[in-house]
Amino acid sequence: MDIDRLRHAAANGNTDAMWALANAYEFGMAAPKDPDEALRWLRLGAAAGSTQCQRDLGERVDPSSGNCIGAGHASEAEHWYQVAIGAGNMEAAYPLGRMLAKLGREAEARTWLHVAAERGEAVAMRRLGDLCEAAGELVDARGWYQQAALLGDDLAKKALRKGKFRA
Image 1 (cartoon, rainbow, N blue to C red):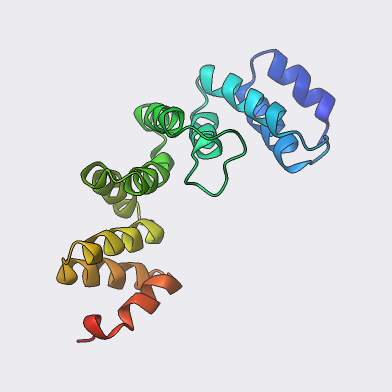
Image 2 (cartoon, rainbow, N blue to C red):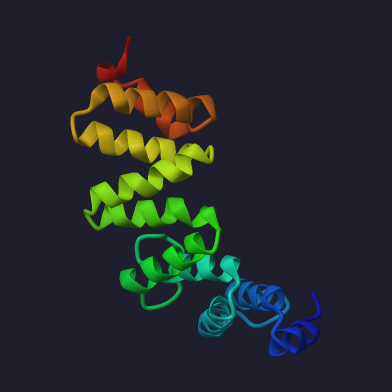
């Protein structure tokens, strides 16, 4: 990775280069590890219309993501997830649903988790199972866990082994 070429391309508006620079700075690949610089490039790429930067920026400022590298602001994360989805990046549906569930906004969370589940994301299916189980909707929970388990989700398999889900 030629960091100088990436900087030049990014400075000239190349959003793929902005995304690559953000990753280089976040993970210390061919550049010193610098979370602030990573966020700066993600913000520039997101503002320039890169749906990958928009989704990743949401993830990096989402305090519930486990990948937060900034101060963490759920409202900013929600904004960028929504912008990415609105521009066609449906990969942002699961993290948005996950965050909304953690914020207690279950109805909205279920909407976005359903979108991700329809895309075949086992983790979204499992999370829907978790929400259904917590709500006492055991038949629905079992169905979501079964779908996720068929896709190899180990936590869904574990949930199915619980006594209340045995056939």
